Amino acid sequence: MHNPILRNSDVLPGAAGAAGRDAGLSLWQATGNPAPALPELRESVRADVAVVGGGYLGLACALQLAEAGADAVLLEAESPGFGASGRNGGQVIPGLKYDPDELRALYGAGPAEAMIDFAGRTADRVFDTVARYGMDCDAVRHGWIQGAHNETMLRTTRRRAAQWQACGADVELLDGEQIGRMVGSAPGLYRGGWIDRRAGSVHPLNYARGLADAAAARGARLYQQSAARRIERAQAGWRIATDRGQVQAGQVVIATNAYTDDLWPGLRTSVVPALSSQIATEPLPAALRETILPGRQAVSDARRLLHYYRLDAAGRLVIGGRGPLSDRDDEGAYRHIRRALVSTFPQLADAPLPYRWSGRLAMTRDGMPHLHRPAPGLTMALGCNGRGVALTTAVGQAIAGHLLAGDASPLPFAAMPIVPIPFHRMHRVFVSLMVQYYKIRDLF
Image 1 (cartoon, rainbow, N blue to C red):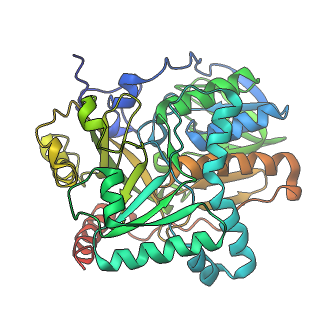
Image 2 (image 1 turned 90 degrees about the vertical axis):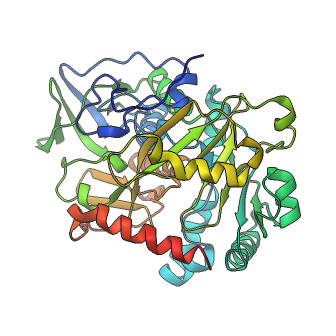
């Protein structure tokens, strides 16, 4: 049996350097469709729009641009889906980190309503895209359950469900017995929670590769192993240099998220890269699959240091949570996730765990995605805070729509200045302190 466990030596071609230690073989790579055969950029090309970054946001943007007849070029430092887009848990969840009433309090009724409407439809964008282009990515839309482990979180989930219900979302409160039956978890683990039936799951890497295939089939020119090294103004817009080529384009979209480097001043230090780690079992026996997530919902708990889990198409239990704060990649770095697996599903205490892997996600100081337009013809979007599958797809499509139609297709978030985080070099220290703080808060 192939046993793809992530090790520091399991580095993909070209993965050394910027991608670092999280560049290993995952369950999704082991079970993924063939990667698109894409060239490296080795010449000078022109385009209407140049997109930097081959994750969901960049790919969705390039696909929509190409669909509309625009000449789009995409530059990816590794291969499509190499970063978080190919490493995440595949949970397609609408919404933002803030609930509707919180958004209204932060931004005012008018701007907030537009954000709420946009955020509430992000999962629709994913499943509509999958259906439209016939993507083979194990798309399942049976909902997302959020379970509350104590009374404080139970009150939070009740408020959250009520607010989305008032917005017309297909959501429902669940008591502890209902969640236990739907999840198959340890008795009494959850006091209650809610289910959001707008949500679902995909094979994350196959979804990224499906976006790449669809974009290329409609005329977008995609280049891999073609990291953008320098960007500068040109007569007709912008010039982007790679190691062996360059692109000149009137518009540029930078969509590098947690793998952002120093291509544009201050952008890398405006977000904090955090590691999320996952483990997965072998396909569960039929008897266990009858009781563990029989409806194939995606699940996460309501803790601040949350764990998330689901079954993949073959019946493997995939569970993830915060990653290590250092470069460790031994069994100990995943021990807390294994403990979460066993506490949630005691019946899996002896289950073999042949897969483990990590990847980066980008966190912002305010918990909101950031959109920047620091110069004419230059758009940047990053900082999904763990809601990347649905959110980045929708934001990428929205940016493409705006570039094609201008103000007739408004952006979902107001552009803001790039603000580097003070003492960014010490982000591991700050993250470590926040982890300890959230551990204490999750107790009450």
